[in-house]
Image 1 (cartoon, rainbow, N blue to C red):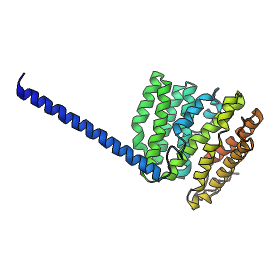
Image 2 (image 1 turned 90 degrees about the vertical axis):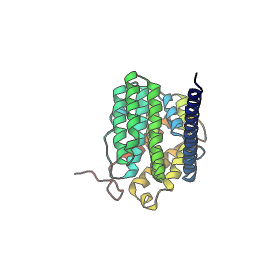
Image 3 (image 1 turned 120 degrees about the vertical axis):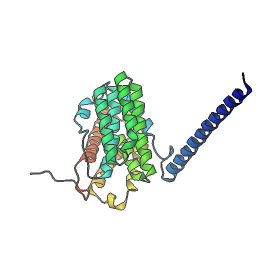
Image 4 (image 1 turned 45 degrees about the vertical axis):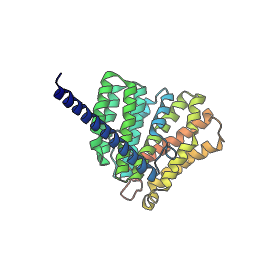
Length: 283
């Protein structure tokens, strides 16, 4: 073997190693920057519930309330970013539950709806790859892969919001996913009660966190009828859970929680005018 060949091969290897090392450094710096940004904006594992953990809890709620999911308007559009962000989170929760019901066509439809909502939020370009992956997992019937991709989809959009310094919308995406998941979980528990399901529904810490996030919205948003009503309905759920003093919710209490969750979700998707007031039904 020629010495020149050995040296040139070694040089290529060292160069490749240098590139690899630089890529790792760049990734670490990017992660460090993202972590610092999240900490600065109040989004961290201590203060903010992980969407992955929230969605994983949904695996417990079977049978899946498919009638409730099917009745939702996946193509709904809103005239404000707050509801658009919440609707995005809601779609992720629906998609997650649909993987539990093993309905690939519906998961694909949710994936397309997620791209439309992401574009409305101004971050649609990041979801093209995720959408293709979701379709591929769906074609293969890889339900776990689909769930993981839905989690990554929400994380991507939340990260995009944070990069835009739009932490309010990042929190509202998470709230939309939690509220929809909570509503679906409550309806599932009413249909087939188990103490384990009821215990998950009785977790007040997550709800307290989101109520705190609502309280930090811009004063203009907090004054709107939409935010006031949504907050009141979430407070109703929290009060009922808190009254139980850490005990597992009974079937009767779960039914009350279900009704309150349905009302909260109805408020989240209700039509509002440009001032944030609920539109009156046309006579």
